[in-house]
Image 1 (cartoon, rainbow, N blue to C red):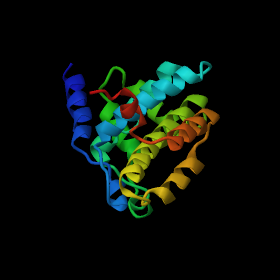
Image 2: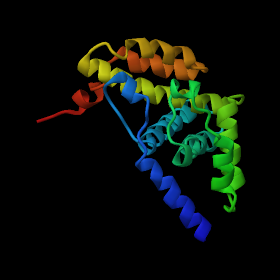
Image 3: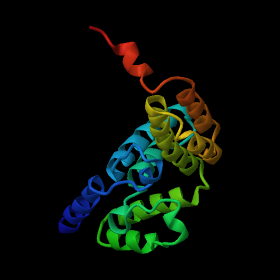
Image 4: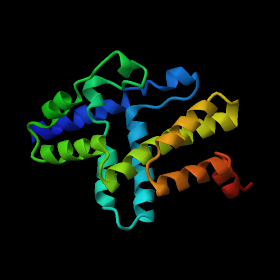
Length: 183
């Protein structure tokens, strides 16, 4: 049980690790744990829209995909040109004493290889989370994210992901609130 307690403390570190890509936008921000929550929620929604996909696998994959960042930090696309993290080693060390460690390793590996329907949906959920933030920033503050939105759209791999992205971009980030607002 000590290994499980240590693992949970380590996973909790994700609440304290900021996502680094927002530095380049100049606006916005979130922790890795906040990011993991929203992509897991997006994955849940996507799984309901694609019944042939293994919904549990998609949700679990999104939940654990960034666990290695508790050890290596969040390295954005620019930093990856100069820093090569050993994610496999981080995952191996993190999971080696866990009775369910192989399950976590398998899910992270499947996410990273992006060869299955579930991994493609999970990766789209990852991109849609960023798209939601970019759209919110654009709606509130201007056009800084516009160039990134195009890149995110190009990264989407599934029809479901593209349909959700289209819906995100067609309204305003606060439409949900305005529809539910009352005095």
